Amino acid sequence: MTTRQPVAVLGGGSFGSAIANLLAENGQVVRLWMRDPQQAASIRQNRENPRYLKGVKIHELVEPVCDLGKTIAESTLIFVALPSTALRAALQPFASQLAGKLLVSTTKGIEANTFKLMSEILRDIAPQARIGVISGPNLAREIAEHALTATVVASEDEELCREVQRVLHGRTFRVYASSDRFGVELGGALKNVYAIMAGMAAALGMGENTRSMLITRALAEMTRFAVKLGANPMTFLGLSGVGDLIVTCSSPKSRNYQVGYALGEGLSLEEAVSRLGEVAEGVNTIKVLKARAEQLEVYMPLVAGLHAILFEGRTLEQVIGALMRGEPKTDVDFISTSGF
Image (tube, rainbow, N blue to C red):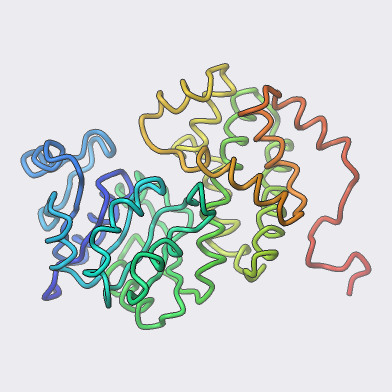
């Protein structure tokens, strides 16, 4: 059954297009907003988004549009799938229209100059809006191709969570709920950094033991940092923590993994990002994350190491060597070594 109002999806990239299709397959009328009129016209004509989801048919209930003000005005439920670098500038001019809207961020990033998560930016822009996030092991192409997938919608607003579950939950896409919006969103943003390192390790032919060690220590770092900022450590045992970390650090379909793989092949950071042709949020996140970790005095050797690789001329072998020489810590920070 369709709702009276269309559901809006802001952002015509791979994830925005995949979410728009999911909504449409569940009977929702969808307005897919994108900046590029040519891209919108092409999708309307050919029912495909070849730049981001080549070969995937865009559902007939998805209408590509370019008028952001009109799209916001016509919808109460709005999924925001804009890059972290563009979100504030795109939505700020429409702040007054966003009051009372249900805004659900899907972007796994951190704003560079403020260290704010996307939901915090939405709160800045629209303090009267109802805000949530979705995050999890959600590769856009697999969602679009109906691989069995689960995600987490997180908000203190239980009614918002139920509404997102109602419109998104389907035969191949399962939606769980959480009240830890901050922890869920932070997990989605932080794991991108470690996926770059995992991609490098794969390109350099490092063993499965090494890659498993990197992923597991990455989870420890993520959790340690998030708890310092007030998140619940148990959140990181779920889909938005360990689930998202595993898929992003293991799959060549992951954009951040692809950037890391290209770096491991010898490309420069600029060349790696250019070859990808899409936003890899981990590149934007690493600088601000390193600075914030130092400010908070949180031990994050992998973050420091990746920063050294990307911006200080170090190699992955040097970073892993330093990690192996470091003083061993406890395996899991939140379990006493005495067993209590």
